[in-house]
Amino acid sequence: MNVLGIETSCDETAVAVVADGRRVLSNVVASQMAEHARYGGVVPEIASRRHVEQINVVLERALAEADLGFGDVDAVAVTNRPGLLGALLVGVTAAKALALALDVPLVGIHHIEAHLYANFLTHPEAAFPAAALVVSGGHTDLFHLKDHGDYVLLGRTRDDAAGEAFDKCARLMGLSYPGGPAIEEAARTGDPKAVALPRAWLEGTPFDFSFSGLKTAVRRRVQNENSPTVPDLAAAFQEAVVDVLVGKTLQAAKAVGAPRVFLAGGVAANGRLRERMQAACDQAGLPLFFPPPALCTDNGAMIAATGYFHLQAGRVDDLSLDTLPSEPLAARAPADAASFS
Ligand code: KG4
Ligand code: ZN
Image 1 (tube, rainbow, N blue to C red):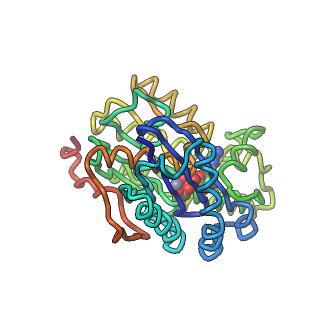
Image 2: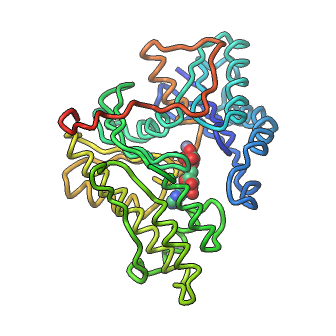
Image 3: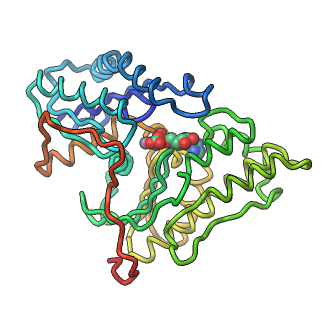
């Protein structure tokens, strides 16, 4: 079954074709990053306009690269939540037009669920249940994934998302947007121990995150007369974020008794996070799954893969499919840790 996946929730116009939920036949991503870079972040109006200009071009390229025609598309999956409203509307409108014209099923996809499902694209042995960390530009969420569609939110960020912290701190350090890859690159020649930075462990809510104190500490260091070198500060910042992400994920996996760990989202492309999470999971005897870097950041393949699993479960949407700018993937677990099961 060939599912066409469309993703336009933020600043990537992305379309892919995935066969049977696992085999990527094409995965085309038109990034607007260069255009938003001068503003230091995504400008919603510009994003919507570029999606309108790009969507048909990207769609045609995705079919051409898969060596398929419109008649070979068996279903259309599209991100309809959460994201920038104007940006989401472009993808959802295109998806509806396609589903109607081709007379194939349409299925709306939650962007965060799709980040998690990117793991099924490259790891046939990936399965539920799992503890999962989603770290992107808009989210830092820890989940207990019990089964397809059965998720519990264990914790989330109270302020900035991890990717947002990378982007904002990169800006403070005079590095380019997006900040994640820029900080990772700068950190390669830095000494993480050269600068002491805080870690918010948030006792009492052990699965929540906070990065605003770290951001303030970075700002102070930059403004300080004896400010550290950018590589040292980048390395220390990256290590502080990774320490907390790895520590809390392992703690969560243990609390819910998860037999494996998923890592997903744009920040999961970070080499240091992957390396440290792998070492921690190896030590705990837990298999760890993370997508290759190109499937960590926003793409259409993860949307198509998620769509396939929904269609297999009999879920289909109609042309009244709505766009929802802020919609949680799962309800929070009750505070009582004993109910983690
Ligand atoms: O998932 P994503 O592509 O878009 C959202 O759904 O938000 O994530 C984008 C975020 C940006 O904040 C970017 O700085 C971060 O992922 N990112 C990274 C790396 N590559 C992308 N953060 C750390 N290290 C990286 N190598
Ligand atoms: Zn994303």
